[in-house]
Length: 336
Image (cartoon, rainbow, N blue to C red; front, top):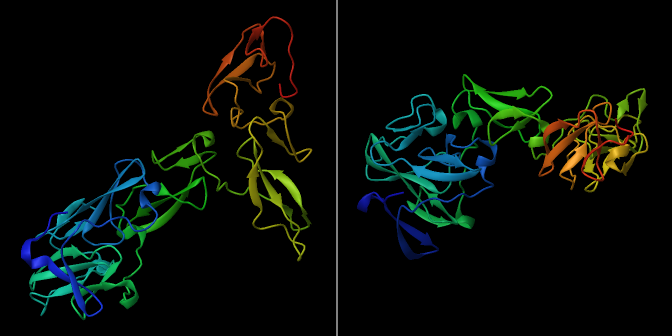
């Protein structure tokens, strides 16, 4: 962020003493990175500022700033503009405030210098300080009474841009006519890095949606029982006994160790080839080739980083997982 010259030299006061002078430094990320929700190269308005914007690169926020006579970032056009006509949360007025500093309504550390009654120019206080409109200075946090408004996603994200819903692996958000909507992937999981619904095995996520009646029905709830998560071969939920006799509404998720699968029939972690599972059988496997569940035991999966790359066939031969290859002798596994 470049400085705006002498106009934005704002005194930083810590107690009664004048300690330093700031010429609008680059703001830094102050919370958990919001770009973990967005696909690569998505551009949004900074939730903490009406004048800054963020470009998401590999889930990391790269900050930019609007300045001069176009101090506001328009999330719909992706441009710096003089005014935001349809966003009341970013309303800044310089009426009767020429040559004064006014607070940024979206952050505690931002401010605007009113060049005239129509031209606010953006600046920020140093890290660990807040802007105080009364004293026209940046002050320590314990002296601050900042009441900057919370943000709404559809005030910072362009319409029709998908982004992750951290509450569920299968869900995502999108703004439609500036209203937040929740969508669900059908039989797949949402991948934030691409903005698409993809195979479950391709998404590193533990917020698995609860299967229907995962902990039993009201007439017959499961009590202290381990059940499959319905999404992976290793994952399971623990349904705890409830004092009111109802199914556990928030069962705990966990997964079996590497090279074992969860067996719902025994409620234990067992050798993968003893467990029938139609999800990705490469999950947690250390072998490069594993037996497929396709009937006949002639097919195998090629695994890359614990994810099935493709399925191959041995033709008229059988696949021997221990040998990692196709053999003529009959080989049988419980799963195929």
